[in-house]
Image (cartoon, rainbow, N blue to C red; front, side, top):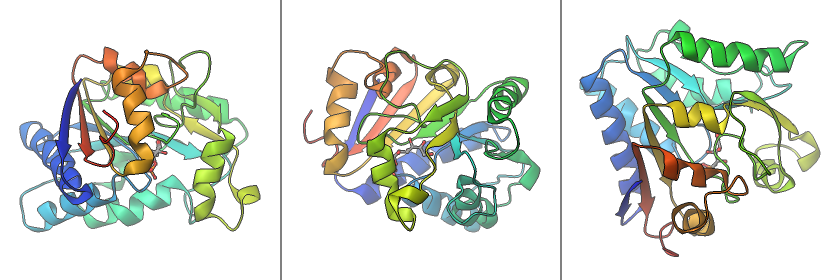
Length: 241
Ligand code: F6R
């Protein structure tokens, strides 16, 4: 794993956006895996700026998001589909049909998960997977557990993740308790991986990811087995290294 430490969250966002932009410039048909959450927002703003300046063309890019809450359709204001529309897709020239977010609705979420994994495969796999990290070391919604999930699956959110995400809902009771998420295996099969972490509250997870054992109790530690993974950290997130 290549680790880059920069002074501020703003610089970390610029660095992540620069790497993604370079990948799109190298390969206009890039298959790009994307996260939601606070971590990628600065990078998304930078990518939108580069698009507006005429530097970046998203017309052939295809995107696959890491996850979606079960039970929220794409119009729900806390759905990850809506998050992506509002924070990136509506501001760049990506065709809507090229953007993919797992479906959290319908009678059979497990089937949605299987279909999503198959769709990634039929797109030729993910070229570059961008992601954040949870305070407990989760990636996507792969929570600490006793085994690594291989493929996209329906996953129960841990109490700490429900707690962390309740800030977006009226109360913890309103936070969905399951999600469809790419598996750790899905993430590891991406040809390149890019993890962005900023802030002191990620420092423990980053220490475990970089220096602890590779264990499903800290899912991001699996990235140490990825042959082409870059972690971009600000000084606060790197403060326990
Ligand atoms: C979001 C996702 C999660 C987040 C993680 C960090 O699609 O897959 O793993 O990346 O929970 O969230 P933030 O960035 O809000 O701290």
